[in-house]
Length: 141
Ligand SMILES: [Zn+2]
Image (tube, rainbow, N blue to C red; front, side, top):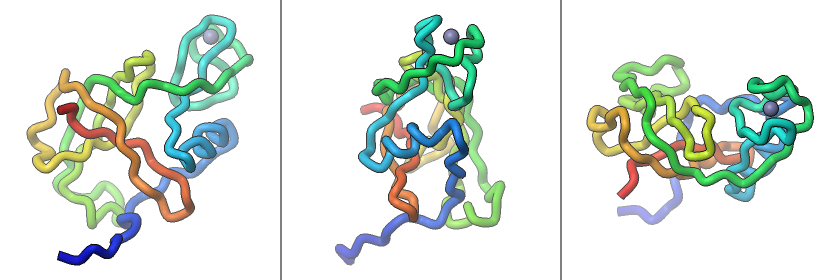
């Protein structure tokens, strides 16, 4: 076995976007933060200018738990995008975070077909080529 770090896997890397800047900046230190609305006190995902619950524009970024439950999952036996070819088969899942919002993500598992709705998952970080990290999940335990 080689001890060399293979570096980031080739994969689709999400763009930052205007509202997502604080989120991606925190991932450089592997900190998982979510946008919280100061008006209604709820977290949301994805980042945007207005709270999707109440329309408030006073958004705070707070450290989130990084745990959740699988709300929906499917396995991609073929890559949805050519740049995901090295990752097949992989899961695309909607995770209901302990902090409230649901996040579209991947669940990294030895057997992707074993991931089921309701499974508890915890956050792990996948390095991206530009120093950011992508939050993905693995089964808890
Ligand atoms: Zn709100």
